[in-house]
Image 1 (cartoon, helix red, strand yellow):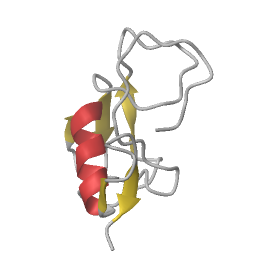
Image 2 (cartoon, rainbow, N blue to C red):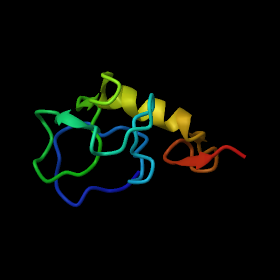
Image 3 (cartoon, rainbow, N blue to C red):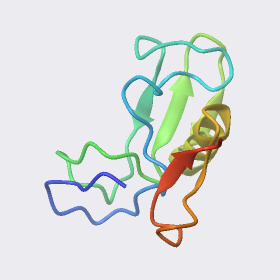
Image 4 (cartoon, rainbow, N blue to C red):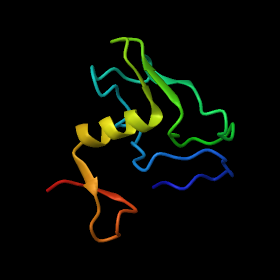
Length: 95
């Protein structure tokens, strides 16, 4: 997981999609239509990581998810698995 540079009181998702991977898992819309509509209220204002309780929307297809669910869907879409070497602290592409 990418480390946040600011102290944050919210729980971050285990999978943190890269900027390139941050597209709607349903329709593929980019950041113009797919974004965090409402951040987790416990998150630090400057924290750039995805939080479990963030409210994520896609205006293109009209779908809505929690940050946790969006991360799970993006992890699956981009074919990442939990790394067996680091005992679940990271993700690797399925080979």
